[in-house]
Image 1 (cartoon, rainbow, N blue to C red):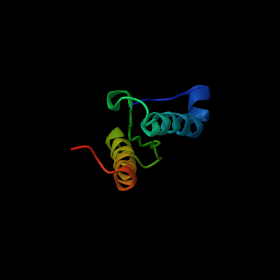
Image 2 (cartoon, rainbow, N blue to C red):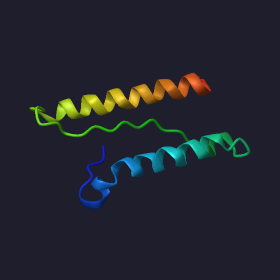
Image 3 (tube, rainbow, N blue to C red):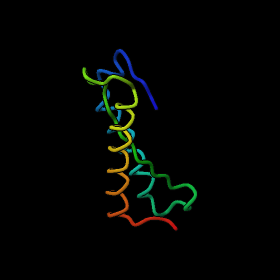
Length: 80
């Protein structure tokens, strides 16, 4: 979990895309040893006016993360 504020919060979408792209580039580097190729699934959620607890925010971020994970598995398979 990362909580952003200030300029980082204002640029949250760009920061998320930058992190996602860095992992995509790392994973796509087939010349690298397998243990040097990284992937990660990330989800982002913001506190909504009707969230009574942070659990609602976490659940939405978790749902977004798992959706990204499923897309990755569809495109690349998964390690077993």
